[in-house]
Structure formats: structure tokens, C-alpha cells
Figure (cartoon, helix red, strand yellow):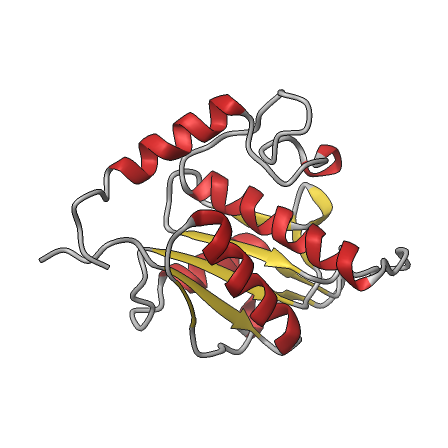
Length: 182
């Protein structure tokens, strides 16, 4: 029998265990699906750019996808490293659109690179929104222009919910798995 959807959370390099526990629990509640914390992985050296002092997020996604040990249907990599793609100074995260992998960084939301360090509840809320945004991309959702939607551009994330339209698309995505066992 086919297994139902399971989200795997993979720490890449050292990540605060409190953040991992919070996100595993919060993502399971938010998505109403099993979430497993997987064994941590080292940040692959080839993703590090010495001049920028950052890790290339696209290469990290490729690393996650190339790991045969990762079984869940969806993978969320979490790192404390600062991330970039060549056309941006930094990124909060990245995902494959309608793919299997997403990644987020705790670095910038936590005040890294001379940012303001937010109170812990604000920080954790930001990380959950960021996780859901990037996972939304991996579930096939594009950026949304509806005010407050989680799928808005990251600077515009205001609520902890998808708009009605994105929620319908997300429900359609998960309907593919109805009738499978977890």
C-alpha cells in the first residue's frame, strides 16, 4: 500500500533544538499531517561561497534532493547559515515549485547580518510563516497578491494563513493523497 504524506524536517548544520521542536509541532498542527524530525546533515562545503560568507540555497536544495536516505514525500531543510542566490544579496529560503524540497534559514529572521533581534515569540512566528511559505511553493503554490496571504512576498507576510484561493489550491494538492495510509 502507498504511504500517506509525511513531512521530513532536516537540520543542516547546527540548529537550535528549541526551534526544531517548535517547527515540527507547529507544522504538524498547521498542515494536519505527520512531521518527522530527521537526522541532521552537515552543510556541504561546496555550497559555501567564501567571498559572500553565505551558502547557496539552490545547491542546498540539490543536496537535499540527492540524499537517498530522505524518505518523506516532502523535505524541509532548516539551517542557521545565511543563504543567497546569485541575483540577490540574501534569501530567507527557497523551494522547488511543485517539487519535493524546500529550505529556510534562521539567520536573517533571527537578526543576523546586523538585523534587529526580535523577541522569541515573534522570531518563532516568523520562522513558521517562512516555513509555510516555502513549503507552499513545494506544494505547487506561486506568489500571491492577496493582502496578508502566506504566499505573498516575504516582506508582506502579515498573517499566519493562506488566502481562500491558495487554501483551495493547497487542498487540491493534498486531495491526491486521500485514501493512502500514513
